[in-house]
Image (cartoon, rainbow, N blue to C red; front, side, top):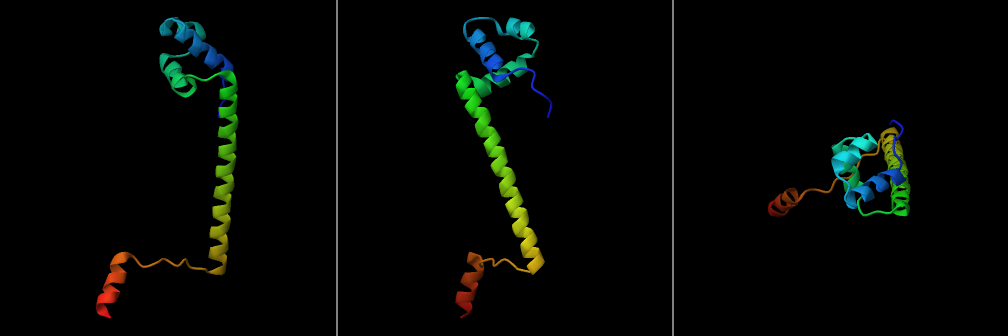
Length: 104
């Protein structure tokens, strides 16, 4: 992923300028970004202060770390099951269990 051009503080500053009445077209031209980028930022950071944005970044990083750990754990489990030839027990579905009852 490429390095970010603007920090969260700058992005929140742009959003606050737009909220204070500066036309979005002028703000985007001065800042050097597109309207679409501004609206994407506003959807993500709208209503936040700088500490909130920092906390959001920390939580996203922690979430990514936990997702990687979970994926590695699933890979380990799959590898162990494959190595030891363990088959998963799948409970019979409702239809099969009803057929078994009627047959008995």
